Length: 299
Length: 289
Image 1 (tube, rainbow over the protein chains, first blue to last red):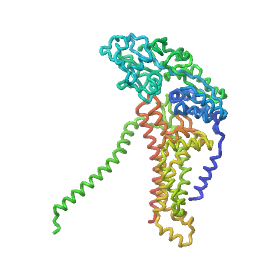
Image 2 (cartoon, helix red, strand yellow):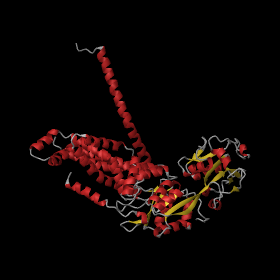
Image 3 (cartoon, rainbow over the protein chains, first blue to last red):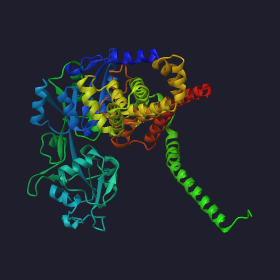
């Protein structure tokens, strides 16, 4: 080995001097740019990416490093103090909060939107309400409902009477959440559904198919499809899919989308969190197919 | 007397069919390479342009370019090479030139073989524990590169050891007989004659380092970070993770995009490898035996 190579090794080792771990907030790079570490939920990752992309234009000196991996990944990074903002589609468990506090971190929860799924029907379909158990019998493996007459309706234009199930491809977060919230964790989807690559495709297909039923993010509802209200139990109240009912938790197929910060947000993180709650930020989450935290008008 | 008998004909036929059999096996091996490359070029080529190579991803990563990921991958590979090649070559020199044949050497050799067999996701978790948390590098290029360096060390060590052992013993003996020390012999005779083999190891390492996804996912690569890294302590985007992400997690990605990214990834590996291949050819031409 030449002396030059030795010098390289020595340099590498010297460069490994322990830097300040960024538990105390966002790091600032040599060029003066602040980097906010944002990690977690795969459901939120595309929204987080869209926020980061737009925020780069608002605040060019702040870089948001977005990483997915799942809510668990984000929360454990929050506990370890390696992220500034953790994304989660579930609440932190008491045990997780306790271990964060053991590390001197006090996670603060922020609701940034809601993941609410609407059920879509053809506008000619007379059905105005559907229950979770009916949905499970339509979509779930072993479910008995195959025809519209079993659901008690005759759909004009649907001569075969067959329920055409429109679903999503199996790596979509929507697919996973519908399975968990409607079918239950251990039940698989019935085979033979039309699996679309995108929420918009689901709505388009349902709008053109009288026999069809589909599900997707509530933001994708439009005038060409009907959205029945959903009953949590067979004799419970029927709740219409709306931003308001998703936010107050009465709509049965909705969950809050959360961001956790270490302590109350400060400085650059606070500015970013405030921007997410602004109309601009909330219109981006709406555009990605989720319900905003409040009603916003977007261009 | 030398007229071909029935037995000769049969032998000839067996000979031919065996040769054809082996040939078809070889072609079968080449087929996947050609099909993969062909599909990538056919489907990915239309999207590749200067803007694609030098632009930032936009529109939720469904449009725009891949520059941050391109730079990130090159940085990760270079830092990993700086960390692992000197250490790997030093270890190989020790094992091949100095190490006595005893239980310790055998244990080290066994250790290297086992290191080569550890799945990359295990290296990833090791990297998180060791470099990200224990050494406090955070999720950074340094942590990702060191994780990859540990993972690819066996490649460098084994390639180097083999090329050192391919240098004829007579060369060393001649050198020792001139009164040279062991280190002088290694430095002036053994290593220069083994360099092309060492570079083969480096080529293999570059390919593996650039393509690995799991080890960098937790240690240094970001889903989205459209800024170039400023130092080894920064996080970065990387081609392999970018490819994974746009193929599985980002909705509405145009079909050509993942193919384009894959094609560029193979392109970087080829460019980095061709540098060491060129160097190797140059060295081989200087070789005097």
